Image (cartoon, rainbow, N blue to C red):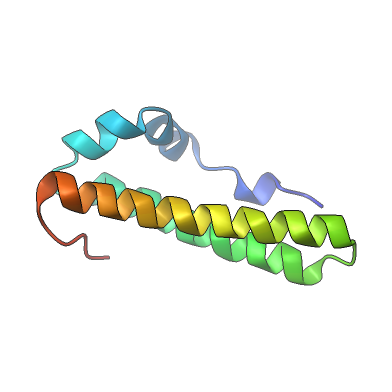
Length: 90
């Protein structure tokens, strides 16, 4: 199973590395929306990997990875909304 397609671009990786500061400083929501778009795409790609895999362990791993990307997206959206008191629209 090739997971390289799930790696974030350099700018997204940098924002993820400093996630707390990124979300706090992102009053417009532009960066957080870009991060959630990446997580949505990664979740979808991991689901596709799970569907295509014939190996049980790889299928299970990819499915859990997809769940983790989805959970991370939800947590990030919730954190932004609580910090900035608004709805993060996509």
